[in-house]
Image 1 (cartoon, rainbow, N blue to C red):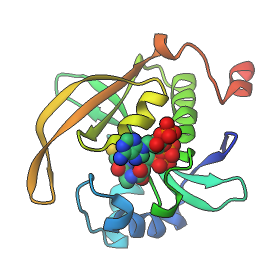
Image 2 (image 1 turned 60 degrees about the vertical axis):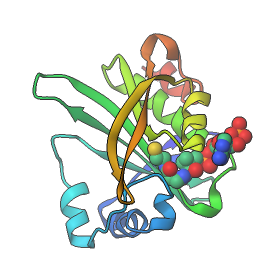
Image 3 (image 1 turned 45 degrees about the horizontal axis):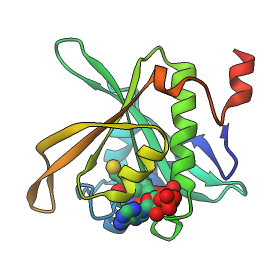
Length: 184
Ligand SMILES: CC(C)(COP(=O)(O)OP(=O)(O)OC[C@H]1O[C@@H](n2cnc3c(N)ncnc32)[C@H](O)[C@@H]1OP(=O)(O)O)[C@@H](O)C(=O)NCCC(=O)NCCS
């Protein structure tokens, strides 16, 4: 478990995958700026529950008492030329938004990834209209690299998205997982 001040991140267990499938098939949980998806529980287990080349790792964002309030994930985006980019994605339950939880979850995830992965950068992609998502990335030290034009098919139309990243040299040191740094 990765412990923060407001929230903890806990790796999703196999038996919890049906709950994640339910969340990520719910348009209200996905919000206005993520593509609509419908996962059957068995299909979801196949896609998310097994080792895959993207090395996707899902975490629940939990309040201190253990209540699940959102999810955050990290995975690799692979290009045939050998480029391998580490990316994060996240979603909060509608009634838990706007309370600072996701900002902290992203900070914890960034600490964890720079402490545990030999990577120079972490990236995130978000719809140009998704101001809350851009705000949480900027608060965690991500910088906007540019616009990916018409890259996502969303609710029947092609949408532009922003590419954000944080570099290891911009991160410098952990802000939340400070004890883990000491143990390295
Ligand atoms: C994006 C999302 C994860 C943010 O989570 P959250 O827990 O609400 O984020 P936080 O409370 O930590 O911070 C949100 C920030 O955005 C700001 N914000 C929210 N809506 C905003 C808007 N429409 N315009 C500008 N800023 C906005 C808040 O004021 C807050 O900033 P502040 O702390 O400086 O006041 C959440 O809105 C969500 O789950 N949305 C649906 C799924 C989604 O879009 N995921 C991202 C896909 S890339």
